[in-house]
Image 1 (cartoon, rainbow, N blue to C red):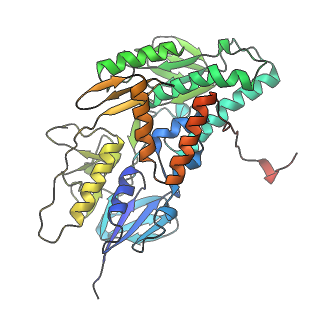
Image 2: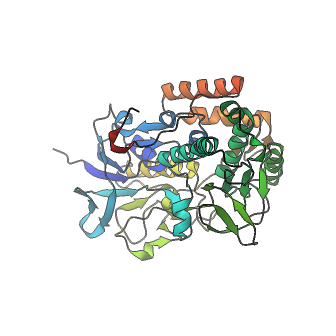
Image 3: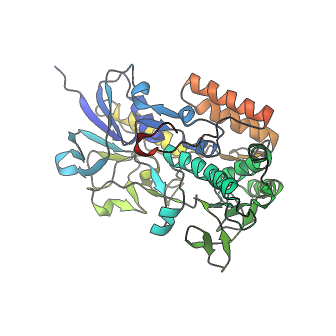
Length: 420
């Protein structure tokens, strides 16, 4: 009887999930490992944080995804160490072996070693963090209305650090929330003093996009009333004030950190194979110095003629690297593997209703058409028909009524109390 090759995939993000899907029904024994039991559609985390869509609409249980496949298993574990000499993976509860290992652990928020910043601000790299932002922001208003504290002392300001797509989209969504939703929920509160502040280390928002996109996004932010602070570097935060290199301070109890990411490195591989906190790989995504270990997606650092300093850490790279690697592994013995190179398919961001910017390889556009294009593309990328319909309904409801009914504060109860 033929022995099937055992392939273990660590991480179920865009890259890991794409690899696994390519193996469905193939003569490979595949195991997907992840510390959470679901795949998360990260581009829409900001809408969860602002109460526009439910977390379940952009989260897909792995066991449901692989429910009808016989050759793919899932294990909810957190990998602690890899022992490449023994083809072994160590987790808290068990050990696993592999013939080929694919690392797709992605990235986490980069706080640049500032532990205090990490403990007091909010990142947004998983569903739990997006829910935590929603809880914290809404609880701020609930406490203010009870304590009857002054609203002009700045303690309720929403400060977003980082002006990439995540920061810009959050700023736009919270600005619309301030204008259209919060005054209805809290009719006795004056929201004129609530400031949405976007802190950027660059001169313009969306610095990785075209000049047209940068200029238009800045204009959109200004139209929405967002304070855009350019060329500023946050140096500290004490829970009440944000301190900047220029000497300026901003009072706030709501600080969201969207200023960068760093790789989720798993212990066990040679440190020489790690560069910029990513695994250095060849053109086939094989980790340098190994024979049967691969890295794909955000965690992979691959130098190519077009990208001599590594590929951008975006979903398109992750998906296409995963697809290319899986197809190479499935090639017949002796058949040449195909090298990977990324063909930039463009980038986009939305900054509130009817406001978006899109950069495609052939042309660029902004405004209403870009906003519809952004909505359509993201809706098509959602995995299940049920979730597509749920998100579409929520979007249409919000579009027509300028409101949503998803502003739930969900926190853990003490002593299992469920009644008052």
